[in-house]
Length: 354
Image 1 (cartoon, helix red, strand yellow):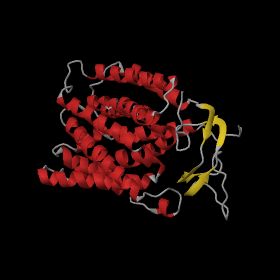
Image 2 (cartoon, one colour; image 1 turned 180 degrees about the vertical axis):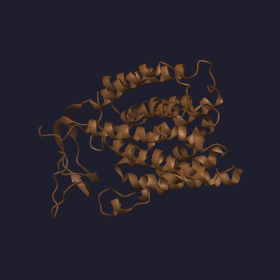
Image 3 (spheres, rainbow, N blue to C red; image 1 turned 90 degrees about the vertical axis):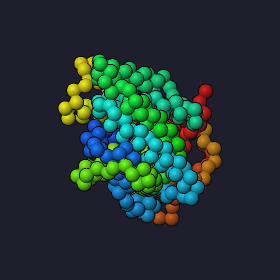
Image 4 (cartoon, one colour; image 1 turned 45 degrees about the vertical axis):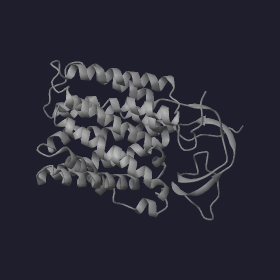
């Protein structure tokens, strides 16, 4: 067994990326409700993902060899996540936002974390330790406090709320199915997902003859899509690359709280005094994630693959004809190795745990 210095805790870096993704997504939820007034849910969903695609029209990263490009074998998965995550889920969300208050809708998005962790465990058997479970329980408790305090009279907790929950199921499945795509260029993944999802939704909106918003509101939705579904998704994929689907989804549960806070600032006073307690629970859960350390002796089998990597991470010691500095991508091989260091469930550490 070899013992070598490990880079800074990858779980902290991945956790911060997931947190930033949550902020970018959370701030847009109440704004989508405002900008989408008078428009159909399908055109609204189309504009959100077309905005994400427009914000990702940049091939320079892949062209320079810093990220692994999308291949033909990835197209079927891209189409699937586009249909589930860029058509079904946003249509459910936008319809739900039109039939419930923005605070309740934002807070109900907590279910996405629960479903993502469940799907990640079922599909990939991601190791979820006690610390992650405790963080998830804290976030669930915080979400319960927020929902219970949002509207004592139950206003908005009907079909609109059910549609939002269906949206979280769709995005949780999207998050899980996207895990293999996280090792590719995030910019290219978002560009193609946004283009496919936005295109499908646009065609469906024209067939259904649903109304589009006025020009000013249309631009607002495009900007929401660029931020909450473009920038956020790129950060999310980078986080998922390092810490896996379950942990990323759990930290992303901060987004509903951020959305509720923005809704309150915009005048939606549905939240009650329990928000402070919920904020503490969310803060505690994020702390658990960002301070998590996962280290044990593990074995790497011989492997040849391509993805973005560095030569100071303890796993990439192959040679180049000329000097290479920083992150880059190319096909490379790994020899068998047994060692111990802090790691997350990234592309090199998807081993089984007892």
